[in-house]
Length: 173
Image 1 (cartoon, rainbow, N blue to C red):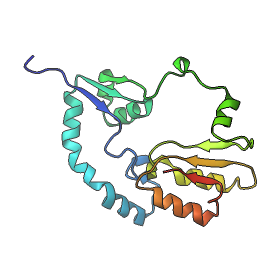
Image 2: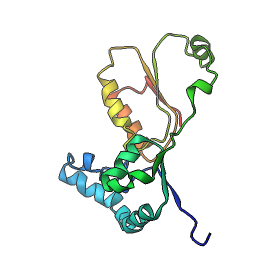
Image 3: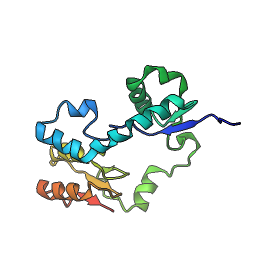
């Protein structure tokens, strides 16, 4: 057809995963607000085109209820267009190894609880908040394993060193 329907895949909004998100921004001190605008403010240059794309799309595919809510926060009329297609795999179709066998294969035979964070190491993923929580649990046995990398990896590594938890947290890269 001359004008085929447009299906738009949306993983976030202009302010998603940034300190400019309204739920985060309102709690920032003024210096942090200025830094947020300096780092992410250019995203707003794309806002008119982005809104036009949302309006013209026949369908909008999102990966989560969170993204759906964020879009509806911007324009409730988008609701009829939005379809959620979750990321990941269906657990019921997977063959998982028996727990003890998996721990043995990974060399985790000491019985210590392991926390695993997989994904990009970015500000929005909350690694520093997780570290702050783990600092309060330093009297308990645990290890945090963090495979991945990202723009926030160096900051996380410095924070781990300052907290004195380098022996309990493995940044895998």
